[in-house]
Image (cartoon, rainbow over all chains, first blue to last red):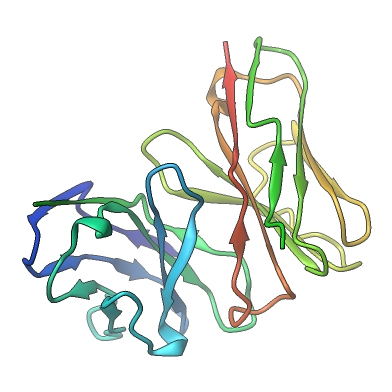
Length: 110
Length: 115
């Protein structure tokens, strides 16, 4: 069965510092990876997905198949980035249901 | 337009009672998903509906859990004989159709507390 691991429950950084939220996965096939974000008192929403190879709000994520990782990075954190971040996996491009990690809370202090 | 809506937002029930949770997907979305999030855990997939196809029930944790969807509209998740371990936030999501290129839009969730 597939699994997504986010080793950090909480990541606390100062404004302007680089951020890396770790995500590792285990799955024998060729999965698709996503990052979802939940800001305080808001709904869970898609941040970015591997297939799009996009940068959203300054965040990027690279799929490393050798290390089975999909870490989320931002060079300069902003206070408004404070939120809960979830890494998620879909078994393949035609498969819709997602397997989520437990999430990492990012706190950016001024 | 309106997003995914869920009702009730909060539900407190006694152990052994049945509960019904409702999800209204975005109009025109053929795919609908139910997830569960227990405290401190990630979201767990429960069930997936795609149009008129047979639902994917592979995530339902026990036969106490069931869900229905009327066509491509409202879905209800029913939990019979609730147990304390059923306490969680139940999230519904919808997408235009199946496939990862179609973003899943989440509702606000229903927080279920079983006493």
